[in-house]
Length: 331
Image (cartoon, rainbow, N blue to C red):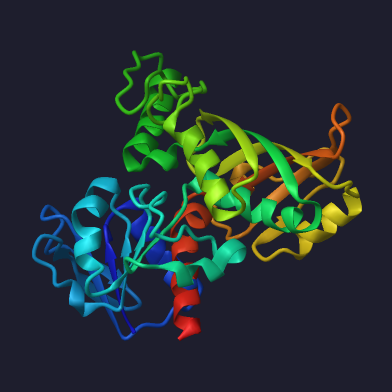
């Protein structure tokens, strides 16, 4: 099995290599691909140096599976060309709602991989990925009717530039210097911004609409979902406060049991100081953590949850590698 990573020098590309190590992901040959600016540079991985190959001249037939970790514009330009020779697992949003491209979280809808028509599989939005892995076992038991979700998303969701800006703005703030925002609409240090991605005509942002549309495609078209997505001054890991309404009566113990037994989930729900997960504890971990499980006493058959997960892992690199493992294991 030969593997390639397009965008190998970026946040998700580097994180994909980390996941390869953590999971002892095996391959025969590895090809690291990036823009002309990075071509010729070398990356050390598993005691071997790999030279970055130029995307514009790279031969896609070299790899059986190619991870695209370089954004929507690169996916738009190169993914279908690559898919003539290799299975493409794309981390961008470009193909997610394409009816001929399965949108996959392996723990939720691995069987949808069989619906692949273009030789392309899409990885969902990071905030969607951690949500549906929690919703799935609950939907199986109680059938979810509606979800109201508020996200608290780290700056790494926007890439390396926003991460660097948070660090720089924090220094500037503490030193009493003037702060200028480059990657955000307002100051992010010691602040929160209720705006991720561009606005649609109805007042929702593209990030919020992604959560609605992707959840329906991955899990169930009948689920109603409304979202408010917020950027917070945290480097890594997204948090979500979810209100979930079921069609069937539920039992909190059954909810905890289902989530505790669900692959990729871990319940940390002690009703005491510190008895919950935060972005700091989730960073670098594969699991999606669920805390603050409680009944919504204002609405029948409804609960509230707190969900935290490393967005660079569950929402990107880890999920895409698990997609690849699912493909390999099915052969």
